[in-house]
Length: 308
Ligand code: SF4
Image 1 (cartoon, protein in one colour):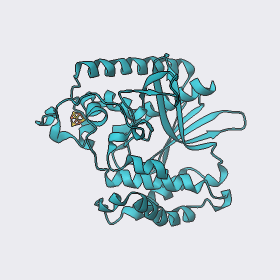
Image 2 (cartoon, helix red, strand yellow):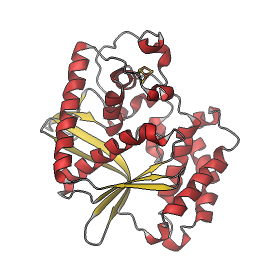
Image 3 (spheres, rainbow, N blue to C red):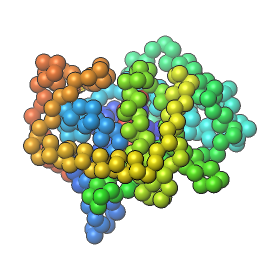
Image 4 (tube, rainbow, N blue to C red):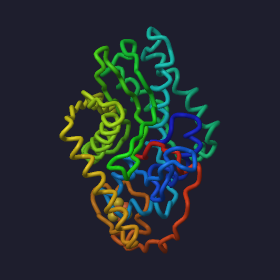
């Protein structure tokens, strides 16, 4: 999805190339003596797992990707859901959310004027309202007080890798239990992305466990199109295994980068890939491998992936 917070919206459109992971080392703290670690976001880690060449195109070549109408609608719906919780509980109604769609879209267009060039279908705004209506069939926001929304979380694992990302919502129960909530608004078949979505949630669960000492009780995927909830409860052993998997994944990325060797891995997800024209699996030729360069300040700011 695109960003829902103004500062990140500017950073994340129109090029996906500033999203997620940087292969270069970044400092955790902004002073000279701070340890320096490579960093990894769930979106970029999932890219490498899905297709190493896709990872290269997005993270190393930084090939531009124009967001799809689905992604723009996802950003819009995320923004409405986030701002809905700014209102007093009694005002968080389906009608209020529906009424927020047009002004929120206007705000996005003001912040990112290029969005006006997006070929949005006639039902773009009505379908955003439908997704929000779907949300109200599975949750009652007047009964919720999220502890955090669009929150950046990060930690260093194995003394060598900074992992970080934004969570849509974090709920904390009176007894201190954590529930991580991720809104899914995409039009793509859900089964095509379910493993990726769960990977993303385990990533957040690992960061929360390492930073707060608590394994989240529930990882919740909220599918607005289908009006369905998918809950998953991780345990510490599983997250420890996941941590080792992430470190191994990072090492594989480092080896591929060193060897400049990122292979295509065709799958049904190719249908959502913007880079078929330069992919050997589709008869294309990748651009020359770019020379290493330091990330800009903007690129060091994490933002959500384009999974929606
Ligand atoms: S088209 Fe498929 S195989 Fe090629 S880069 Fe994209 S995801 Fe990978």
